[in-house]
Image (cartoon, rainbow, N blue to C red; front, top):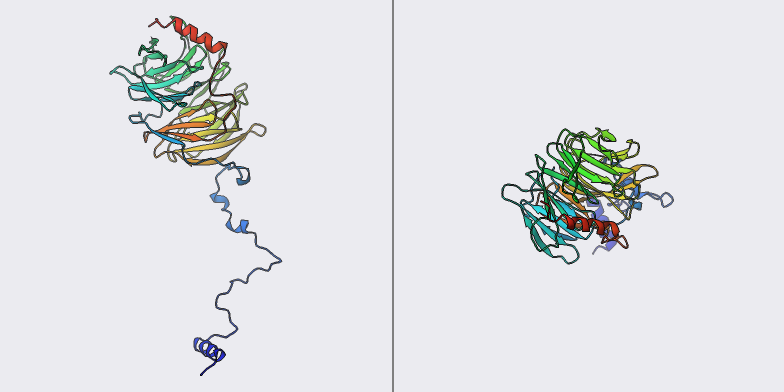
Length: 398
């Protein structure tokens, strides 16, 4: 009988191998311990696969990529130029589904129907007053209705007429409401007086789809389907302070920065995909970034030097950006797949922690992006109470 050694030798000879040859070996030779391999250089993604202007991983904070809550929004009109959702300072969210406006109380989770508009029209925009006590509803007919959600009368406080085309966007500045229409008309309305129209702001040659007053009420930004961004000084609305045409598509997304009051962010549509940052005092463009897809909404954070953008074709995502005021640079923090179709509306909770998105897939989603702002979540003060009293005084005006 052969020994184990003899048996091994016979097998090796039959296979044509040497007993001293290793079958599984490094190719090339394993590295010496004195020269450790840098695994980062091997497994790091190539430069071509990296996102442009991305925040380094070491500086990213964790952001949940799953929504906290998902609600149904059946019947949402799939129209990029309309603004059908808004989150108030009183922590209530309004959303328009065709002819009906619903109110969702974020504190209790209760949903109620505010109103159903006349059969010959449908809702084209909703916007809460600065203090969150009243809701303006823009209609396809060109009318604007002012509602008090706490009223039991189930009818508007007043209806303001005069526009000849649909009211797709609105923005409040205390008791002043600015409206933009499909014809390009831009009006200021003082809701506290009978003759509500106080000014006509002329700049846009196509539908106005973006409109935002700065928090202090001194500047107004407007964007339209004529690819124009206009910045208006509240003290002189006879002409725009600045008109900028760097966008190559409609401008719906507008946002004023809460921690740098002169900074305005604007986002362009499908043929543009750019986010531009402007100095409202000088009109200078201080930074631009390619978002990679249609920009449908922008909101700045109150707790971080960041902003969030929502998108349509081709990504339908939600993106968080880091913005440095000192270097005027914007870097992508994270892309979150948000919806199955383009995002049409973006809202921010009054405590600054949560954003709401609604899309053509008829889903309303809530995303926890930032930490809460201490002391925020409701509004009060003499100015808010003053506006409310004046609104009550004109409740009988139609």
